Length: 509
Picture 1 (cartoon, rainbow, N blue to C red):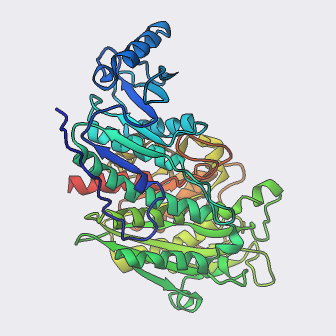
Picture 2: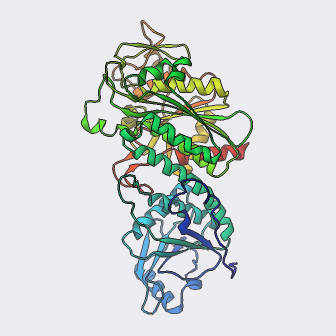
């Protein structure tokens, strides 16, 4: 039963850096009433909903008539919108259909994002959403609010921020439980926002050093951040990372961000951080393609965002992020096709294509994570291959792993949040394509072969005997048009996936 007293929402992270802009405009209340300018109700098919307990007789009759005329029964995705009757304190009433109500976290996020789109043209700023009677009320309200917030993201580094004065008030039975569930998602949202901001920033303002400086800000959250400069990289024998970065006047960096929220062996995440990818001497021929290459550090951005998400909610996980960062440029010092580099692993690599540079820097990053932190599992994330986009498009990221348990748990996490993974093959035949006559291996496979799989087989050589997965997010990290929970531009893809996976792993342990 609903209480008569109002339960205030205390933002747990108000004193921490970079809270999402909308977090202070969402509240939860135990009071059930039709206050505000817009009222949003949710309808599960073949069930009652709280319209009769929220609306005065005139407004209720008005709504019931509209539902009857429009044959609205709560079918999933259907929306009924009507102006409130004269004399009502409301301006408008919306009813959203939930179908059978069995919606995943990602589907609820999408519902919140679509609701944000629906209301963007409305001038109403005070919105009440009645979550009472929905399945798992507290998580329902928190997930819808999370999607609403994610869609309202704006990248405003170079333009005046758009003002968004809308305030959301959720009415439900247990406001405290909803507030707690929302705070967890506020941390994840902060990670998504960080990843989007990093990827949206033009490469001239997001060099390896700039990215490292952004990572250092997480120290305020208790994250241990280490930055290794070019001299340190050379000293470690990271010839692959150094080779890719030497063509730029801005030298490479290796960033390590460690959130030690638990003891024991950590989970290691390694992210590709090419802050700009010209292709090197195998220069990208398409002007349209090269203009988007500020996004080639989206793997590193997603992983740093995940670290922030875990730190914001004080998650009981031991997580180490290793982020090799470099600009892949053309100059008199740049790698030439046919050059040989030696990785920190000790393996020599014949560089057949300077535009296949991401796997080179990941090789050194994976070695560092394995040897310095002895993790229990290793996952790398990268915008690695156009081959993956041709195979899967933008709906799924590519997943490569021989570890069945890891494939299962990552895939389940992706389905839950809507950042879906599709397993692609690892096979010895693709590895055989990497044989070189003058080095231990080449950095590309055969012409016309499955480039995403040969790239994954290259990385496998640097995974040791650890449970390992490679996630290729090419095509997922950047969108040319709006999605349900993201405006056009950087999506922050991977933060929600990895956060969900880490939290599920934490529960299992």
